[in-house]
Image (cartoon, rainbow, N blue to C red; front, side, top):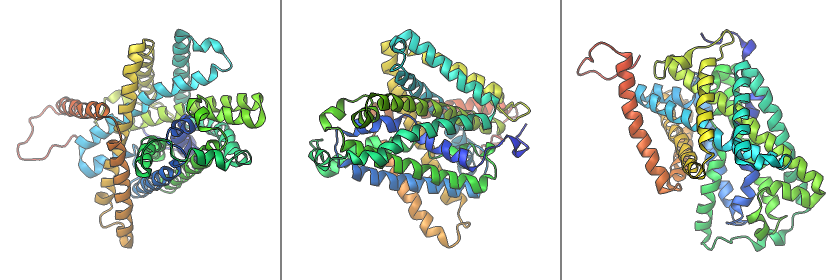
Length: 445
């Protein structure tokens, strides 16, 4: 059952905030400390990354205007390359969405330990995380309007300290502090920028959020492109201004050791109360993005299930068009993985899985870039050359990100692709009882 009415869909502002919130998540609050090992030269890394992210946002914006099908990368890959790559794209992206939630909720609840020290206990932390995950599953079951409203509030709360530092932090900015740590990586300028990209490239994962959720967006052909580019621009401005300001406020040696650079900057400027407010806002922003990523996981699974490329349970919806059973399956899977992180060894293993999930997201990005040139062939008019150049930039962006990943992560990602190939063949046999006609291409419709 599809969503028939716009009554249950969301407008431009909430979906734009969802995009920016999904992109920033918890990352923005940790970036200054992560980049401190490189130094102020990271500003060049930001410029390169923002160009790549904007190119990718233009790719998704144009694809959504050509094809407003629900599912984002999955729908584009299936249309351009057929059911196998559609299946692969969906499974990779679906895994990346909910596996990433596990790491996100741990750090979000960890921020709250500032106010509730008992959350530092492993068991208490774990079961609190499970409760929070189910809270956002339930909010998604209530409907897309509810979850986007919650995330809009969370994103606004997160933007308060980010914008405060980005604007007012410059009153405490010291150019000497910034320039003294211009390049502390011990590498050449190019090498330092390359090491920065390994951090900044991950910071824009989520650019596809609006296109994946197209089924719950009002007037998607208009609103999805605007929300995609708008969300990326909001994140880019917040990232650059806030991280640069903090690098000029906090000496490099202290910044490298900081577990809450925004909180430390606020305490330095305005005292302990300000630091506590920033910590709360960081937790709200981080946990709020869980709702958006859970929504994306359910929507991409539903889109594929509607096409027979995913188990039918993910396609079943209630009268509001919400895939309730699919969301419950997500909640169960996230609970199992969350509990498995109680063990220190399992946590270390999960850190590897989380890194692999980022590559899982980059593969659908690559397919979407290629899909634009294929689906858009003959439909781009006199802008064909411009979009070809944009796609080239986006290709380089994605490939560079994979090259910057660890060898082990790439190996496990390749293994995952081989497993998905086996799963697809079994899925084909499940859907088709008649013999396959020799000499004809496989279709799973």
